[in-house]
Length: 195
Ligand code: TYD
Image (cartoon, rainbow, N blue to C red; front, side, top):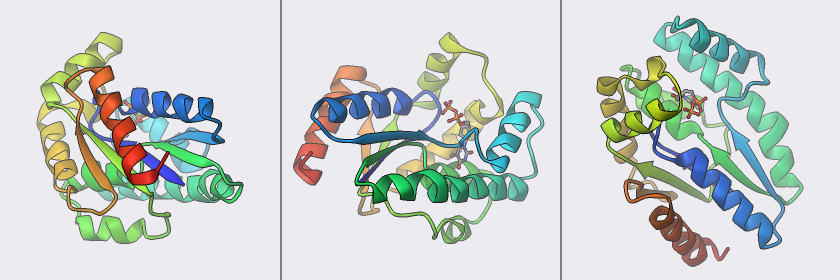
């Protein structure tokens, strides 16, 4: 089984991916919590260097790097974990690629096609928050990077929200605080996946 947490920067996806993983572990499930972009693959390392230097690659090159990184992740971590019967919990997945690289003007159908090798998750939570609030949350923790400019994040959010009709996607209002959001996630996982 595979569960994804995604959304704009500062939406709380990493927090809820962690909380859900811990909760499922305590219930006796074997859980693997994975984060994308990875820092292990050659493409993931290139992306990290780009972020650290502040030099953003050309859109098509950036897209290619995120997809290459995912290909590595699917082959080396996701498929093996699924095969061994684990519940895979993802902190970001191809929904981020459609939203962030789509917001650069790249064709979203093409982005989906380039990701067709990646297994489709059983459930994808997209945590929704106003970009202003997301940026505020990030600022308390660290300096922002080029993914975190307000106008850009507005476009990214709009694309995330447009995914509402995909069968596995659940859009969750994440502005209510951690506990309210967690309660909603627990309810949906129980009702829809029986876990
Ligand atoms: P990440 O290190 O996960 O940052 P955070 O912990 O703040 O979520 O990701 C860095 C940035 O990469 C993030 O702002 C979103 C972006 N991103 C894409 O643009 N496309 C993608 O496919 C993925 C997975 C991430």
